Length: 205
Length: 191
Image 1: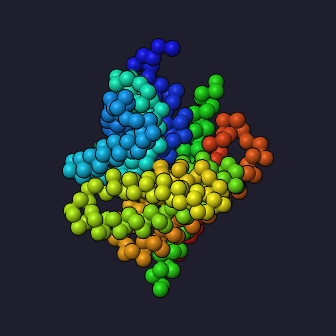
Image 2 (image 1 turned 180 degrees about the horizontal axis):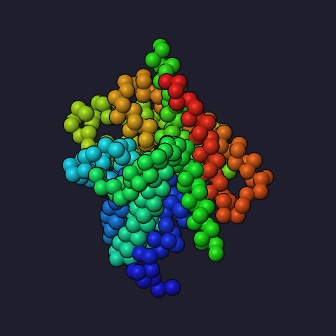
Image 3 (image 1 turned 90 degrees about the vertical axis):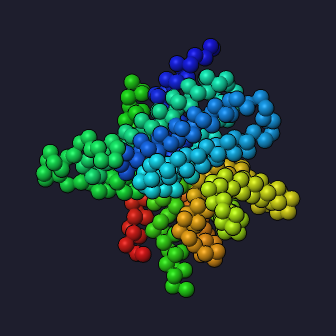
């Protein structure tokens, strides 16, 4: 089967979208999605690492001996994660404080290592970039969707970015009582489980 | 002494690493289908987490801070954990084959377990001392094992139940985890 760049890009958006189709990278998915804004920030940081790591792994795929490849991939990923950490501290400090430990944790995010091992180490540069971008954007969208759902139920708002509120239920319906459970730990699991169930229902039709 | 009791209770129950901090979710869902694998994974995590946090603490305080290289923390820690896992694997294979057979494939999987890496980073972020970080790590690991084994027990029962088709597998597992997390949530007021 001839692999086209568009196909590799689009598959990350629905067919193999993490964390729904590929059940990987659950820790940041559950941990940071108390607000849509944090989901987007986390998704973009992961996308950056994913694309950069895919580029480097794909370029070095003939130079790296197969026996030590995993160790090499981890070092490549860790380098880019450190880069993101420093960049965020410089340019998006409030977001960095909110995401906290989950930024260094991108290094052990199975999605990144999984794509490097399963795709970038076997395919050319442009295909790998398309794959990284597709999976990354799919991941960002999933986090944003989960974040939006939890935020609207749990706090009555949807925040796109610092200070930009898309919806504010408390101003539309003054009597609105936020369902706090959703922005707390147990809500994350249940919300993701129900979203996954919804996706299965749509997908099986 | 009281401080340590508070620390232990908070790390095992209140800030449970799986159900409240969301670290190490991949093994939580990956190895909880059978009780046997859950127990194996829990043991392996307890073993590695304590060693890893001790070694990363020493390296951070006496190497990275001294040399002003704290920004290399992520790279240094992941390298330490990866080589530690490799080393533990070789050591167990040679000297304690029974334990090695028990832990089996779970040891290499731990390299990419965010609970191990996350706990090491948390200990540094919270500025724990050496003994405190060991106690905290051990409690985190026990909390991990407890949650994982409880979850595996529930999941084994779900296999016997009739679940609507779209909810099957991961979906129902997530909802179950949410309910277990809710029960741990009751400890919130304790500390």
